[in-house]
Length: 408
Image (cartoon, rainbow, N blue to C red; front, side):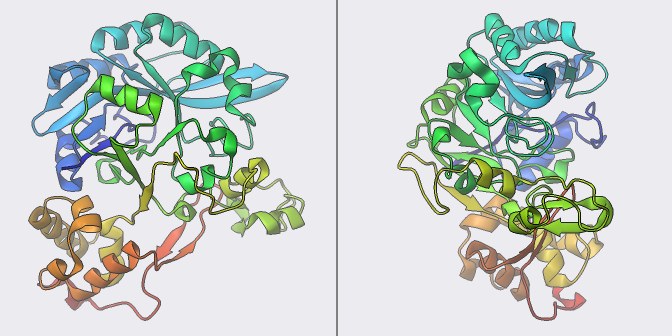
């Protein structure tokens, strides 16, 4: 029986985040999604940490529980600093083994920024120094650079990042074991860069609302505790870490180059042809993930390193149902269909990946079944995201189904 984990989310205390991001609601969302372990996010925020202590009970080393869902202490921070005359903005996820360590880490980091102002605090602290400070508190912490390719606030970001892990973390690089790919890239894109082979690639939702939980996630072969998770990420243990669940990266909101203000979306080749300038207003384009990966790549596409952990691409089930029914994702018919399906088959991920297609027929409208099958086979068309605009997955080329498909 697999064990599914989403390590990186946010609380209601983070900016632009749903008020529903509280532990009881996350437990309900985890059951709907069919996942086992959720990162708490935002443990550096004093009010959120108090909320966590109120609701979570320790069950084993580094693992807590609320009702049916396990939790692990994590928090994302934004490290902003100057290095070599350039402003750097790096987001980093910190894993802590217990509340005592989480509180001590928060106390140390609070010297560099206001922990009350945002669940993901902005710290005037060099990323290299952040690693040292956190590990001085406890060498059992994990530090994982977040969504490493997005143009803003990331390790390799075109606007404020670096060209290598070593350039960013210098003598602390040996303590970085894993990288988070982010929604706009997938492992295959990262495999084009040989220097990343030693790092374990993880994928998480970065959810700001409960329904986005586990849109990307990590699948292990069995239940794992904190120390086991740490060892798996340190050693890239393929016997326990089975695969990641991935967005189609084109759907991520920074995949292609572009300029949102002008509605301009360009492939890397088109952007280069335009000298990375918007053809409408002549301002600079936001350079997307695909372009940035290509700049740093030293391998061809489709190369698979021998040590690579596999991945599977998914499209959220509500999106599949919405397109099949020709309805909005929040419409009554889509939500009712979605809830009936996930309750019957014990979770969205189970429906998307595991239930045989023939077993879905008869209970789910046939057009929805067809959509699930097409996604499993990768038979989708995608309009690429760019400059903060999400891409759009299209599953059905022909005219979409009518509202009667919402009836069982």
